[in-house]
Image 1 (cartoon, helix red, strand yellow):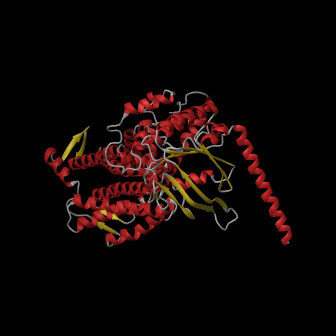
Image 2 (image 1 turned 90 degrees about the vertical axis):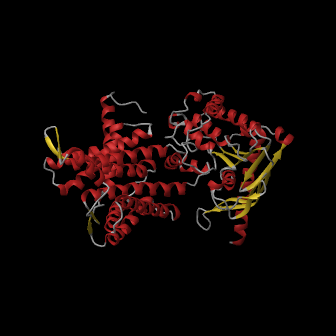
Image 3 (image 1 turned 45 degrees about the vertical axis):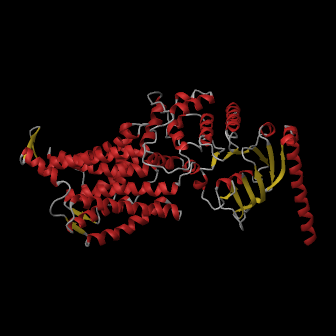
Length: 312
Length: 270
């Protein structure tokens, strides 16, 4: 039970990552690998700022800002110098590795003292005592506080992005991903939209990293490896969950659900004996299967005749 | 109103794919006029539109709208002056956005995209009336993703979007060429009505001799990057489809003569 609560909390932190990847991958159709660098960047900046005595909220915001800067540089390299989006991301990711080491001052950094989770952890402990009995298991109430913080942040991020994508600016960003030529003909610089979109995406990824570091109480230069694939897995899984939808809100919700579900599946797999070292291999295979699978299944269904969903 | 001064453009200069698309075009279109452009393949008719819309930088010459030189402006900056409809019926709309969202984006043509909700204060009633004019029942589909509509339906909406804010210039680039005959007829019909009502200076490229003969108050034939023929008024009205086909035969004959002349000259220098 305690494991479940912790897993859900991490799942919700990765939901923030998934929403960021949703923005780059689904809205712009760019699998932005900058994420592998901006996730630890967010973590590193937050950890460093906390060490320097900043308050947790400002430290987290600073991490987000770092991600936004990283994303906008990737975007600028892509649109200004016409470098392939994937390559721009790879360059930025590589550059960020050094930046992260600089920020951390060493290969990792412990976080002591209070974090963004402290207020609600303390609140839960005051309200429920040291532990709560849920379904016959003792759960530390601090974990519940952490879960609550994660849920609030994930919900806020999901709602904010949904509302944003319905604004003039957000709709222009969606149109950029779908039909850049049209948007230019309507008088909006698609270059600016792309830079802004990648900045926002990486700000969310960095936020996720900053939260993750504070939950684990340390930041590590290596913690970004495979983050993009994890995010893609969540987004694709989420899309499978909610189906082909018209509503942006539902699509964003799908990404959040996908991240949590994916985390649960990972926890179950490890409990069932999966070697944690094999996790990234399994994740990559799952992503590949999720991308290729639906088309393959649809083909199978069509051959059997009937049962397939009508095109939306 | 719309003026082109000595406009030149060569694509891929110095390579095997070098194309001299515009070889010095001077043109002045009066405000509110409707000019039809025809020409052989590769004659520069689409490039002419690109020069106005800012799809590329000119090698030489200027483009002026109401006396303002816009030659150096990027594409998106010109958009508040220039409405466009492309040949590809899917190029003018964003498929995942609804009909209303597409129209809303077009209604803010050339303006800053703000954080205001896109559909707040949307002129749904006005849009419904506009869509009803098309006569395809689109007025009931404001909240459907536009990707669900057919090419003809989407091209009709693109046309509405291009004229929604009454831009100074309207560019139609073979906008019925990729449609089936029935849809093409519908879109042309809508074009005539919208152009008649708007004050936009319209430049329409077409492959259809029938459209060229019946539409517009001025006709320009392009050939080898130059204006080959420019007629208007009564003279334009007198031109029939057969005359235009004759014109094409003549342009092709000129081509043959040029090629033959080249061969002759080459022989002498060998």
